[in-house]
Length: 156
Image (cartoon, rainbow, N blue to C red):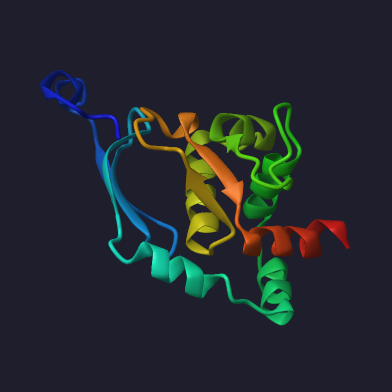
């Protein structure tokens, strides 16, 4: 969340905003389209229960998800697993969004939309984004589903 007081919000006067849903409606945020900052966000109250239900998936489902990845989604997934800072495919490893975007060579807007799509599909998740001022400063990680889909899409 980027806005904590009067001065933080004043810096966004005249900017355009968008209300964005992340994951399986696990989080909703008001984001500044000019600064790419999350102004305010809230987690869904029953998010923990929804996450545990989502982790039950089959190999067939993973194969279908892998087949239906868009080219931009594949680029972001490759960028999240092959970049100068880390390999998000390893256990409990988080990667900065800015390095994924840099590795992908996609425009910031296209990369942001693609990352949002992957979050909605449950393939990646944001972690440690409380208090981050820009989307590029957030961190992402592959979910268990994401690791399975990545393996099918790129390691077979």
